[in-house]
Length: 59
Image (tube, rainbow, N blue to C red; front, side):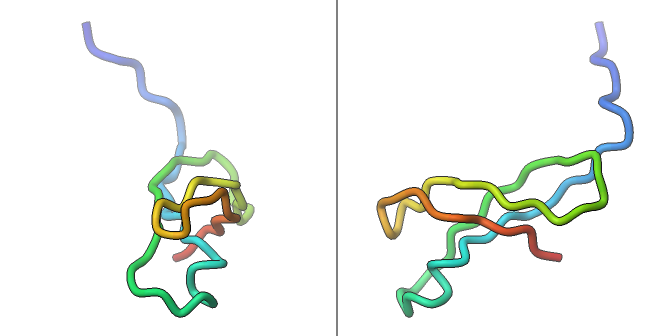
């Protein structure tokens, strides 16, 4: 059986805010979906910094 569509969900990219200011090479990004038009902020694990950090939605 085929899966049902999840409605009008938009795929977004989340990027770490602390990693940009740390000056370390690389990036921490996650891909997720949302169903609203507001910008998202989530606490996710950053494997380079080895801690939980705030990830904000980018374009």
